[in-house]
Image (cartoon, rainbow, N blue to C red; front, side, top):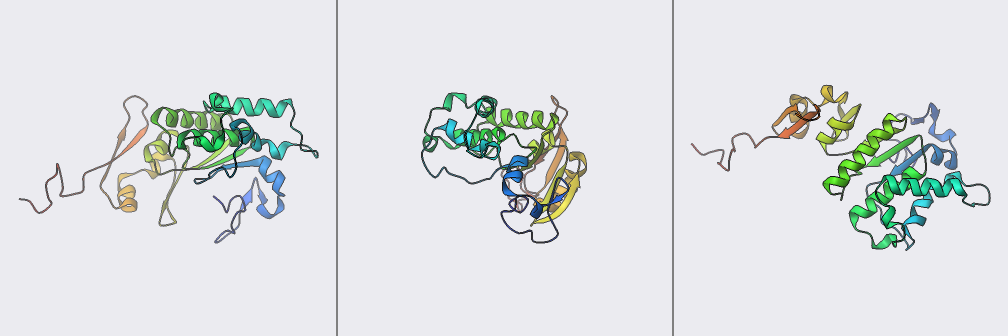
Length: 225
């Protein structure tokens, strides 16, 4: 993900963004096109949540760096979409892990990018906020936003993703639609653990269930008769 945004050089090949070589983009133009929510980040200094989210507007500011009504509207809209409006006056350094995660996603949405990259965006979130964020990202993708999401949650990927790239020790193990990638034989090969796949009776989405280790059921040792 860092290579896609120019943070580190690509180990091989070339990175192209919207059909253009990454090197052809200046930093401000790239920031208008793509926003990122990295996995690990703690605010370096105390500011209000509103001001922290407003940092996402920096690529859109004019030469004098002054924010206008449109910038303020984008910030308030992003806070509301991430259920963080009630946190707007809080010091960002006092937030819990889950609160900070929602605020960081709000900052990226306030940037109004065409492409959004997120690394484990549901980390630290409770189930309700996790589902709300995933539904928000799915709706944003349906509205035209390109969303690239890194996750270890196979069921979330199965339910919300259009395409999945499954990695095994940094190499591509499978890619394609969820039903193509999340096959039992593929998953067992990659994760080296027995798996079962099925369908959610409510949503119809593909589901993945890790099984007890082979030879070890209900607490019985594999060597037991």
